[in-house]
Length: 112
Length: 115
Image 1 (tube, helix red, strand yellow):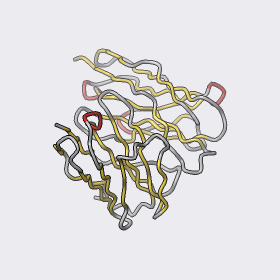
Image 2: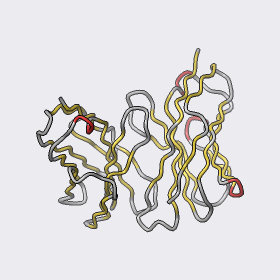
Image 3: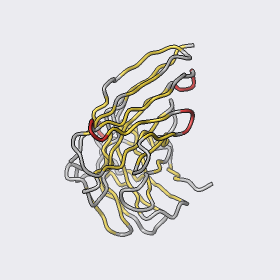
Image 4: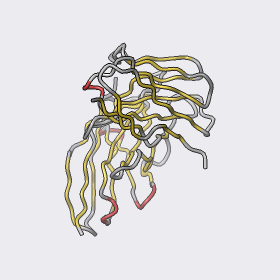
């Protein structure tokens, strides 16, 4: 089945230790998104790629970066995680901008 | 940018009761509208969507939603809920004038269905 896959599902890191979260998709969608979702809150868009074009939300901390080496993969790098970065990180894809987004299962990040 | 209001943060109801969740967006124009559901421990899933056409949209699991343009609303309904409908429900909007197509979520409504 075509899908959005996120690895790992759970990630524990130490305060200040860089961490990378991975997302892959078999939908062949042009757009990939990263969201942060904290407990009992709506997902918050961090950034997205339309093909290779990158759009960073204005309030996304500089600590968060992303890479999209090819259509199928997108990575979220957190350079120096703080305690406040503990959250669920969701990857989503859409065929084109303004179309339906399909979400992966998320990676739950715990910062010790 | 659009903002999305969901009227209830928590709803508790019994099985077989009817459910209606309110959703309003902030201003008119072309919008794409969505309801997503997040079951406990699971990922966000699309329940239904409206882009154009018939304002009464049917989705999965017996859910439907009605787009009322004059009220900037997109309320979700289910005539008879089941225990398995316990989940968090998010309304979301894409403003048609936003070239990046940002999906604006409401704060979510936690629905608990008791047996």
